[in-house]
Length: 216
Image (cartoon, rainbow, N blue to C red):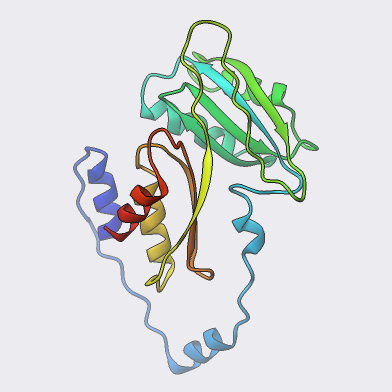
């Protein structure tokens, strides 16, 4: 509850805890059941962010975004689509990189989905498209849109080893903080592997800066 309150305040809103949660107390039988419950591997879901043998990636140029709320609105709407694996929207470059299952949805359908988001103010064009394979990560080649605008940001990936994580709260805390850092496009933290895989713009940040941010 304290962490939720802190995150809300970090965005500039006042918050207070109206009712403290009642923490779950486990009896001996419950503890034994938990110990004997097999842990499901989440290796499949961990690949969703950056690598998927059946994924394609498209980058869209989006005119009409004005603030972070536009970013969240687009990300939330596209993430709700069953065929979409991940969405990274950048207000600075006015772009969205979407990784999706090409058997279930097309770039044109994604374009229309963005333009249909209320209040219908977005003008969308396809900047690039790439297709993944089992042996290669999906990293879109970002082309410069027609016109005199600045070029799109680069994307690189780094893997950082993280010792000291003990539970999912550690994972959520690291992902929540690092995802807000300048230049970070996507972060996936694995408690099992003690690693953090981060997609970032090398012109805005570096693996060393990100490592120090996690330690801080």
